[in-house]
Image 1: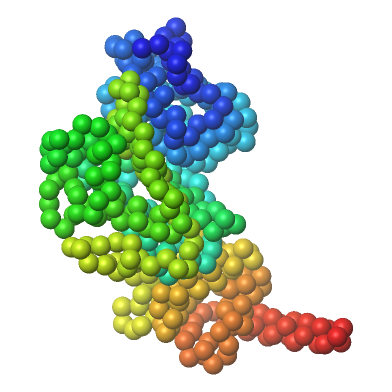
Image 2 (image 1 turned 60 degrees about the horizontal axis):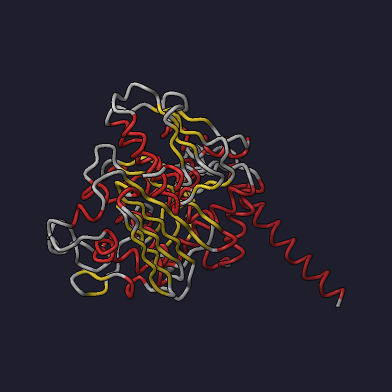
Amino acid sequence: MSNLNITIKYSRYLNSISFLPKIGCYFIGDFSAAVNLMQAHNRDKKRVVVLDFSMVIHCYSTGMLPIIATVNRLFNQGYQFEIQMPGNPSLASLFIRTNWAHFLCPDHYPLVMGVEKHLHTRNFKNNEDINRLTLDFMDLILRTMVVPKDIISGLEWSIYEICDNVINHANTPFGGFIESIIFPKEARVGFTIADGGNGILNSMIGQFPGLIKSTDAIERALEFGVTGTGEKGRGNGMAGTKQITVMSGGSIDIISGAGRLYVTPGGLVKKEQGPDFFFQGTNVSGGILMNKEFSIGKAIFVYGKAAQPDDLIVFSHEDPDEDAYVLKIKNEATGVGTRVAGKQMYTKVINLLSKNPDYGLRIDWSGIEVISHSFADEFIARLYDLKGKLWFDQHVKHLHIAPLVTKLLSYAIVLRKEVKITGSMINADMN
């Protein structure tokens, strides 16, 4: 195979893999080809392999996560890596903030955790990890933008089911990697989930020995009830995720082995590459739009019937003793000191109430001694203004609230009402 035909190149002299200005999912095959060359010329595994990102200008999780999954598979085989960071300071910072640098070179770059969960790549190895990352991501979604109630179910289903596929089918000791990004202005959520395991064709060939091409295996995996294990009642995760993404107006892009399938509302495009470009693993990238017309019941089926899955994020906030949601303010990642934090809490409450409009709201202020006026105005005063005094008095209860916090909330409600009245008077005078 000629090294001149690929856009991501391996240098035997430098023992390095160099990346050109843009990294996306369309270059996964080229990266796999470069890895094959590296393995052919680096059999003793003693030389450190350099991943050279110095020329990269644009970089996306759809391309980075399969690179990370591949590198971790090679870690497990005894290979050693170091990275040359992008020359662009902003992009180099992104490598650190997203944890790309950590998962490629963990000895030199620590794991980053914080409030930017949508920027952080996460590793998962078991069901506990999947539960935790799903709740974290859904919590971020609910705080960031208003989400149609069935989209909440669709997002959670997709993330959980694709991650579960990795645990059950990829057969990899280091699990999978996920990154999810929110685009509020575009009313869209994107996610990428990658592993360096068996791949879809190898997982399914035992049940479907006639499969030869990776694209054919991916296409079969997108059918309801089809699974590599042959177990009844399974095989709905990939099919359901495809329906959810496409029926919302978004897309799904699946790369595994030598195959790639890209599905949009306009149809399906598939491509089979040569054996030199074989990606050992699976990469799933999905985009879901905030479509108010989307119906989760029309998107997923179990035993041939429409399904309405329970929402893990909603259940985690339900009061076990009454029809109400419980918000423990101290546990919220946003804090209580800024207007942005107040807006996020307001948005989260609106999303939760969209699932069960008649539910009450129990706000637990334990451990909170003071809040900013901006937070009180954007969260409580805004909710009071939207729902009205009657609804608020009947549905909202404050638990373990400090006297000062009570005064600050009351003042914010009164002040917002006064500002609204004054604004109306000014408009009337102008007319």
